[in-house]
Image (cartoon, rainbow, N blue to C red; front, top):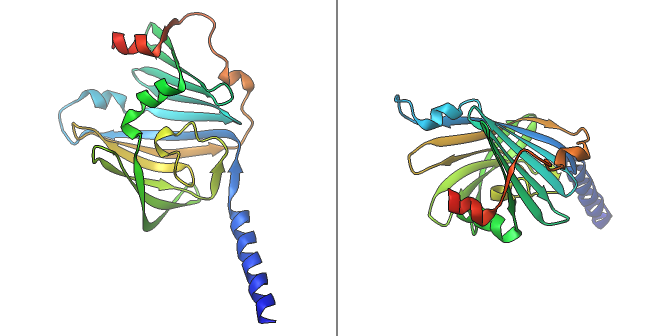
Length: 218
């Protein structure tokens, strides 16, 4: 009888856990971005106040749009074709940069080999219970990430730097060499279908270049 009770209890625990988690296969995840320079003097980063990041996800496709007062940076990732395209819209300058998986890895090389340490602590963001992790980069830089295990993304390509976490990052911050802190916090999660056209590439109006060409010109 005791064994039957233990089995029933374990089944209930698993059932409750599965109910609490929700698969995220399609929808939109939006972030607000706050940049803190730690200085009273105006810096270039101050002009990025009001920046937002919107991730459109549909199966193995993702589109990330970072919109700032200076312009828009869009990354379109097609997981089926393993193809990545970056669109840069800065004033009248429009660039379409094509990347291979190796190019994408190089573009994000500061995050390659990063590790996470899981710590005690909980935080509620948009009614999602979040857990704490500390990221450590190869150069010794660390930053805090709050992620939720209650959402299970089918596609993690939209979050390269936190894709190994057991749930999407709901809030995280980074600090650059100048001491400027950038905080990303989820402002909205929408499960509505995303039109396939959202992942179409523009057919004109952009100067097309390879990743190597974009690096040579930077």
